[in-house]
Length: 111
Length: 116
Image 1 (cartoon, rainbow over the protein chains, first blue to last red):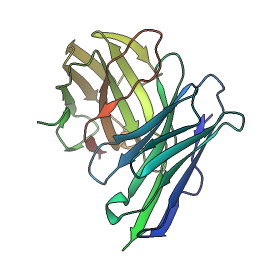
Image 2: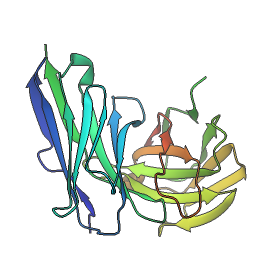
Image 3: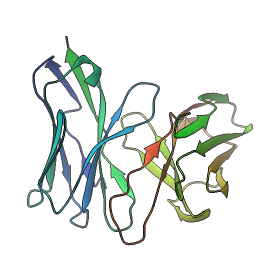
């Protein structure tokens, strides 16, 4: 059973606009959440994370929001740039430090 | 030099072959992982090594055999694979601290495996 779900597998957005990626999880024991970005022919690279004690974490153009009661998190990229075109994976971990991943969202930023 | 290096990048093998995937991390981490990524599926954790000991094996068939000779190197030995084993195999490493969440894993570029 998939514990981390990413719906809407692909997203197209104009350069300069906001990209919003959503992620839902089912395991209430998860207390740390991460987003990874993956280009073709490369491994996933860590982008941003958030602890369950926070509801927002911002790093430059990237912001992650966490809604624990809804078991939902989102990644906002603003402004979107062509170099942001990639697959984005949501991941979550609990006390055992094992990561559960979603299937990923393809983002295409149109110049 | 990149943090986590995997070789080879591409591998084609027959079902009767024996081959090995190699992973090397230069980050000083104490934990290493093998993942399998199949098309349209989430990353599947296969094996976890912590301090060079295997601490997790997620019901992986015995035709996959991991080896961790030291904290910097991880191998995945393959024998008598099936066509459905064709996938991207990713290695990752992290610095684990007992009882503390926040495990950021760093990935290699992967080995694209095709089993004919």
